[in-house]
Length: 233
Ligand code: MN
Image 1: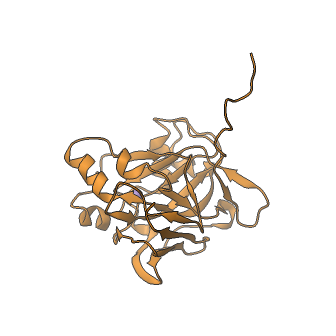
Image 2: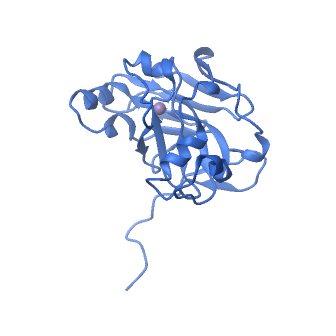
């Protein structure tokens, strides 16, 4: 039996680490839905206080921060969602919330790009969200700041600018399910592993982008995430 691949495997997605020489290899991308009250409201929903819910994005096809990507195919309503991203650095299974922060390697700014019309169609027809959420260049994450240099997330401002204009502007205090609660909850359903990313949900102000738009998402104390939307292919 040969161990050679039929074709070259896809390259490993990886993120830069602020102040480091090594890369953070990405395993899975978990995303939390409806985790800020005002965003849930603007979408005509309420936050579920019983439990958070999730969807996943493929790691293959992640855009790199700073990239110019084509306007996504199959949609007429591509939206930005600016989010705090947790980078998991160790294994966690059924971890309690009070221990959960110990498995966070670091934090980053991320864009959960969304084909809103396809997501809405999925909701209307009671189908999965994959077409709206899990597409090429649908996840973009900036460099990771190690948790050791982030004493607290409290009070930090999260912001998204499009062509220099503020579109999303909130505080991380607005997270309904806090980061330790998310990790603890998710670890009841998955063996979290080093390399996993968790998008923690977007604040209000989501909206459409068009070709030529330059997106910059920032959170106080973290490196920004950047994305430019090119013409459709
Ligand atoms: Mn989102």
